[in-house]
Image (tube, rainbow, N blue to C red):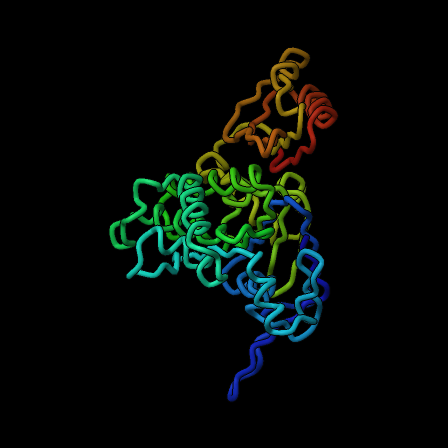
Length: 337
């Protein structure tokens, strides 16, 4: 559905060095994917997102959406292609003097759609985003979450094949953010729309995306399924992002006071649900004190990490460690007593 090949974007200034915002980025997003792009501020993710609908024209490289090479299209052809690429903005970008209905109808009017079809389509969209009772309200009367729902309805108006989301929840509280993300997941599944979402939060990516690209200094440094990136991050920057998301840093007092070997135990898939700790304690004369950790699900697959203190006689500890290594995805010995 989306193909980027060696895309580069530079910003040129008269009295300052050029800023190379996107560096030689290549990626593919399949039909129906929920694809995330994550990185810190200044990583180039927003610029990259805007190249997908050619709001930002790349200095070099190809952008192909739904089989059309956007760089080869005449202005009128590009305008028509953009009708099938919806966009959701961080700060909503609603017309303050227009009602909810009129904001959602705006793209349809621009496209020259007849009034009967406009009313049918907007009513359908407002039902989808659960805003039918607010049909005649103005944006000033809406909450942040409701404003974003209007933005989503507007983005869907022309039956887009692709939906681009520019940090759609960063201005919202946690509960509202969760509801908006669930709505986007529903839209992706129900309408089979390809979604590309950018965020600086790995938690957002983990909640809704199936695949993810990690950006740093304008480059994509790692890409893959969300589960694989969280389970086995390769690049040091990604490792750090994942660790911060898991929040497994122990307080200094626990690091200083543990009595045995300090372990970091990683689980994947069905092994995360198996009673491995209990079986280790049954087989070997050791004590395992869980200091910190969690098991969560990304999609339907389990992923877990535990920080534990292993105590016992040296031989028993070695045997227990060997057994654990054989039955978990990865075991790291953080500190040996």
